[in-house]
Length: 104
Image (cartoon, rainbow, N blue to C red; front, side, top):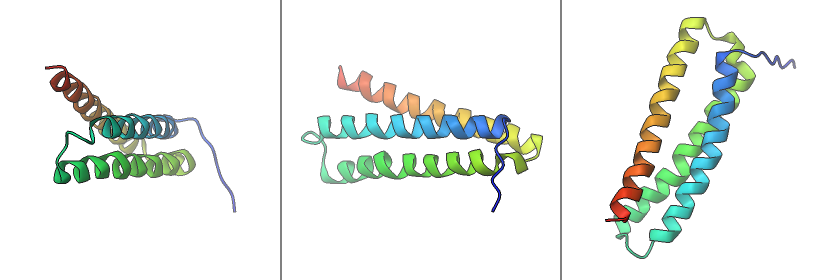
């Protein structure tokens, strides 16, 4: 079994996914426990799924990119960069909107 580590866009995106997935999970769990009393049961389940499922997928994709990212063509690496930018934008937007509505 051979593992090849290369430093390219895909492996850097993998590291970003791993770091962002761990920090997003920690922040969402903290936010969920802070607001658990004010949320309804369906909203709590949705936030719980968002706090656990999305970072788990991000961690899995991050490890795949780190270990197998060297196999991607440059155009696929660019596509993954665009998707990563989109995921990070929507995640940050979700966190910021939640904090703004909380302070109202």
